[in-house]
Amino acid sequence: MLARAEVAQTSNDASGCTFENKAYEIQIAGTPFRIFDTTGLNEGEQGRIPHAKAVQSLYSLIRQLDGVSLLIYCMKGRVIANARANWMLFHKVICREHVPIIAVVTGLEEENNMDDWWERDANKETFKRHNMKPKDVACVVAIRGSDNRYGPEYERSRNRLENLIKRHHLEDPWSTDKGDWYGKIYESVYDAGICFFATEQNEFVGEIWTAYEEFITECQIGKKEAEKLQRALIRTEERIERSRYRK
Image (cartoon, rainbow, N blue to C red; front, side, top):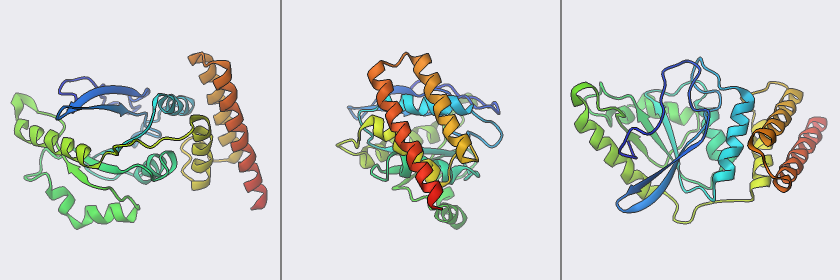
């Protein structure tokens, strides 16, 4: 939609399709933006993206970022069970609440007025109950439909989303040290109890190191960066161990 072309892969398969982080260059009213389609952790209600692959993809994303200006949280018509965890992961853990977040609600083709979805008290209450507080909400249709059935709504949706991006993005992107950032993310994920890929502390640490070793091999990470990441993970493991013994 934002790229004004069919560029992003989509899928209805239960296993999910967002295994990699892909960047798309777009322009809104002459201003260039880089939009990242990010890996979903525990994506979908039935599908599962493999644990190590999700961890590797997350660090791949961090390595690409010089900073973050805006988070766009997309959902299809309703808040599913893992919505709060994903919201916390990206907004509170990865970006530490330094980056504004907006919600985009898709799949509203059957609504007489797309904005009616957000006006319903039940939907606002669901966001409130999950402690999800977007700066703004865009209710949209993401398809034109057969014979351009939803063409006018599609155009209004794109305009609405572009306006929200222009209004809420940070002029000066937020960023932090990438090595420490990675370690802090996984410490925060464990502490916050939103670990997608492990239920026990030992399993959690094991997944981190498995992801690290596979990532270094597959992506041919340089020695200096690999050592920096390793130190960050060791510090994370030590903090988790200390916290474990204090309890």
